[in-house]
Amino acid sequence: MRKWKCCSFILALGLWQLLAMAGALGRTPSPVDVVKGLYDLIVTGLPPGYYLQWHLLASLERVLIGFALAVVLAVPLGILMGSSTVFDAVLDPLVEVVRPIPPLAWLPLAVIWFGIGLFSAAFMIFLGAFFPILLNTITGVKSVDPCLVEAARTLGARRQTIILRVLTPGAMPSIVTGLRIGIGIGWMTLVAAEMTGVRSGYGLGYMILTARDVARYDLVVAGMVVIGTVGFLMDRMVKYAEKRLLRWM
Amino acid sequence: MDVENGGPVVELRSLYKSFTEKKTGRELQVLDHLDLEVRRGRFTCVVGPSGCGKTTLLRLIGGLEAPSSGEVLFEGSKVRGPGPERGMVFQEYALFPWRTVLRNVTFGLSLKGIPHREAGARADEYLETVGLTGYEDLYPRELSGGMKQRVAIARTLAVQPRILLMDEPFASLDAQTRNGMQEFLVQLWRRTGTSIIFVTHSVDEAVFMGQKIVGLSKRPARMIKTFENDLPYPRNRTAAEFTGLRARILEYLAVEMLR
Image 1 (spheres, rainbow over the protein chains, first blue to last red):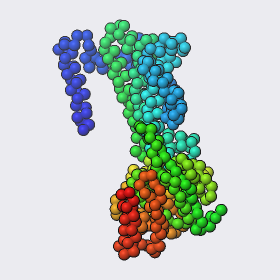
Image 2 (image 1 turned 120 degrees about the horizontal axis):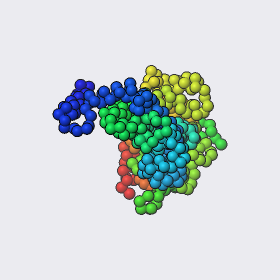
Image 3 (image 1 turned 60 degrees about the vertical axis):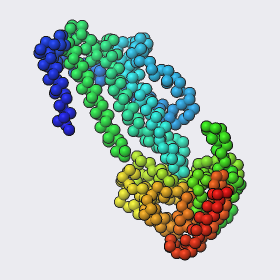
Image 4 (image 1 turned 180 degrees about the horizontal axis):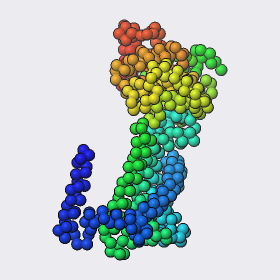
């Protein structure tokens, strides 16, 4: 199976290279150009002295802060909304109206609230990750078998115990799904947010923007490859955590 | 208040329960002014056609439902919600899937504030009682239906309830396992002396285990008749007295269904 998984990848790369060498792709770089571009980004940096590693680190920092904030707020709120019909009825309309607003639409406000820089980018991430985590947590809590709640009650559990020791663990599979979707959307949001400007001059989105401005399309694609790979790795990490955390499933 | 052996542990007084149908807004009567007295230490079975309100009856005693009128008394005082002194065992086992067998059994113990170690030791005891020593670290999904139900019984017994309320606990087991579980439960009851109310739609099951068999009519349920069953334990399903009693109850229920 593993062999076959690589197969489509190699095939696509080969075809891409051939087309590029035949001159059919115009200014689109070939895979070899992209690899060279990656090397340039690591050794020379873009702009020179601004190395890929630092761009990556800056982006990860923003992701981590925004994502952590989203988890810390969305999970407890989701548990409250999932377990209390009153809470749900009060907050649901607000959530449903705010949720469809794309994080990028918040950027102007984010800039006047947090200035250009780490926190407004982290805020974008937060917005991207918050709603998938919230909604999945609510769904998870609501889908806990009511029989388990009744069993807990007959064993002497009160409301607080039920929330903490029945609803929360019961919702965990759904919460973890929310985390996976959340970090994915957060990561995508971040790159877009960075493309609209960062003060420090670091960030993968910002780097791609710079590459476009100097017409280095090899570096644009190299940046895309890094973003894709890191996104993939983050997803794998959450998936691994899921496996460890949810052994009972 | 008489809490000696043989005194009433549960009393239902003119118990009436109805639900409002969500779609039509119609009132659906489930229990119609039921009176019943359950004596301490006895094994009582409740039988009746499916949908007749047997489960509702048990849930009212367990405190998971509130009566529309009338009252449920447990040891002389009015039931106002669930409590560990009335242990419930559900048809669907209701084990916490994220907890191991052992930690399922310690759940109720830790709620009582029993320290971790002691709770573990006590859980081990009850797991031994239900014959599941060695399975402590498995998760519920790794167990068969019969084993799951035994864990659920151990979990309920561990908090030392004064009555065991069982809602068709063996209904989703295959016939073989089911017979085994019935024998197991009778032995357990004879050893511990806990009062048991056991709801089932199987007359055979009721006659095999119960000392008193309460037949409910179809909905809305009025209690129709109680049968005393003095056959000695362990009971023989093929004995003439057994099949005779079984036939009498079945006949009664059949007549009731036709009314």
